[in-house]
Image 1 (cartoon, rainbow, N blue to C red):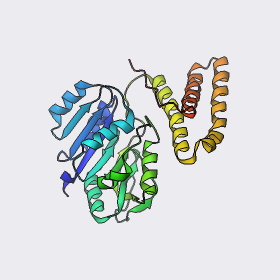
Image 2: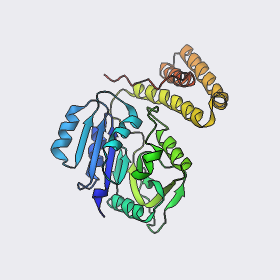
Image 3: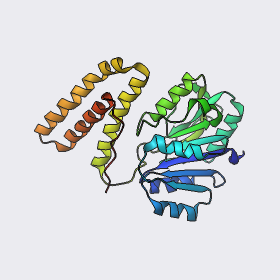
Image 4: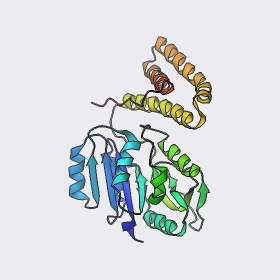
Length: 279
């Protein structure tokens, strides 16, 4: 197949080890755009030396998954784009099978792969594409002409739900999403980032999970319905934080503190402002 019809976009953040492994699984005839969120110019230098098919753009600040991917997508000049997480490994025929399916399915907006999480699974490749309402964000194959009206990722999301939201808008626009059983991509899952501050990573994840959950609900269900649904979660997080703090369980108390703060800020209509504090 013609690999010049597709560009792969990978957003990274302290992901060098996983990224290098991912790039080894990609045919070097395929154009790859890496958007680096951690201001790591050394990574750019290494990629320029070893991977002639890779273009790396280092951002001045951590813009998150949605905005960084949009920057990459706007740099794409091919017919299709594949959003990939750095903690993925493509099976040898994955790109070819994406392109074969894209040539046969005329009405798709998004295609997604069958995926594995480290265990080998036998899968019959005769299975036909399956129409679905959503696919996972670790690997999203975009038919770019369909996104002139849909738009790319909602940049209000910093982390979480941006893929769910994109799928929702594709379906609402009348376009189709298909799962491809003959495209296999291994995905580690939530292991893209490689730094040692586990507490800060969990705080960041919990803050943004709660912020994004409410923002997504408010976007499609309205404020009042979302508030009624999330108010018990807000109160639970607050009281859980207080109780754990009294019991001197500092790790867990901080997690619930930031769950509460993420949700509270989303309810108040504040932007998704929290950023991981990495020294």
